[in-house]
Structures are given as structure tokens and as C-alpha cells.
Amino acid sequence: QVQLVESGGGLVQAGGSLRLSCAASGRTFSSYAMGWFRQAPGKEREFVAAISWSGRRIYYTDSVKGRFTISRDNAKNTVYLQMNSLKPEDTAVYYCAATNNGGVGVTSMAYDYWGQGTQVSVSS
Image (cartoon, one colour):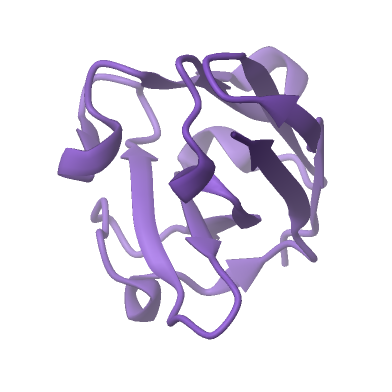
């Protein structure tokens, strides 16, 4: 079992930056691949970024490439999402997710554990 708690959301102007954190419980965090997803009002949850347990494999959705960076610190049981050059269309609730099925998924079905989410709002 892994419990995930996101933090770092907030309100920011377009062009600004935020760093989201996801703290995980449990002693086996380093064996989990981690992902970030987001859900805007009236829309389905969508993939944002994912990182393998080692950090060697990283994936991004096209709309955030070059602006967002996912990273992890296994010693701190934490995964991060650095978000730069934010746009109003990045406004959503952001969720982190974890899986230890051996893969690095880009769909929500690939993940077994989810946090409660943190709100990110970007004003124009």
C-alpha cells in the first residue's frame, strides 16, 4: 500500500511557475513508477508526466514538453512536477499516482494508487 499526498498548488499568473510535490508513505517508494495527471472542470483526467522508479525513463504529454519537468527523490519518498511558463489551459486539479507493476504508464488505468489532488489555477 502506498499513500500519496500532493502539495504546492495555488493561483499564479500566466507565465509564472509552480512546483508540485507528492509525498509517498511506505518503505518501497523507490520501486514505484510515478505519474502526474490533471483534470480540468468538465473534462476527463489526462496524463501529464511519468517517471520510472530509477528516473531513467521519463514521459510527457506534448502540451507540457519544454515547460514541465518531473523528477523524484527516492531518499525523500517524493516526486516533483516543476511547472514553468504556465498557461490558463493548465488550470486543473493535479493528481499524482503510483504503480509497481513494472511499467511506466501514460494512462490512468496503469496506476494503482492516487492522491487527493491539488488545485492549480492560472489566470490570464
